[in-house]
Length: 169
Image (cartoon, rainbow, N blue to C red; front, top):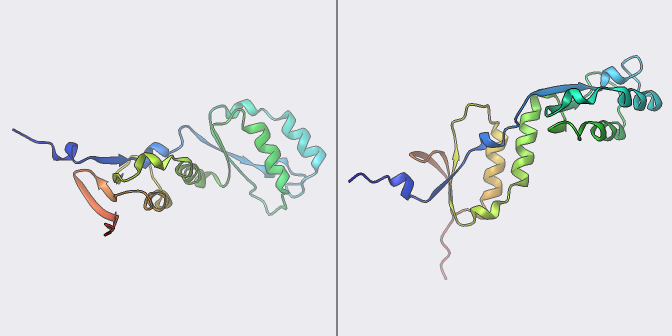
């Protein structure tokens, strides 16, 4: 009789690829909304945002940034997200290439780790999407206080990362 030891091991696999943002990443460069691409004029900025076609970001991941060396007041980012949040899947202040990492870290921060209390965990190593190293660091940092053990890889081939020390009474 064949016994599937992996299935019987009680290991829980966490696949960080599942935290990857779905959909297209779209750039929202504030430069196009500035006077001479350098100066933010509040009245003009507000009017331009009001007239902008926000529906084009429906379900997309919006990376908000400014590609020119302009001084952008903090409220400008707040105003952009007030228009974008109702339609976009995600709105993040960063360059487009940084958006996946920021979204993954946000999802890890929101993860209810109580489900992993005293469990033996495997953080899946292979993925089709480029999961950033920061995600592996952050999930491990969050799980160390509660996990029985943490491994990296696949359930059939793991690298031990952390093991809870037994407490002697």
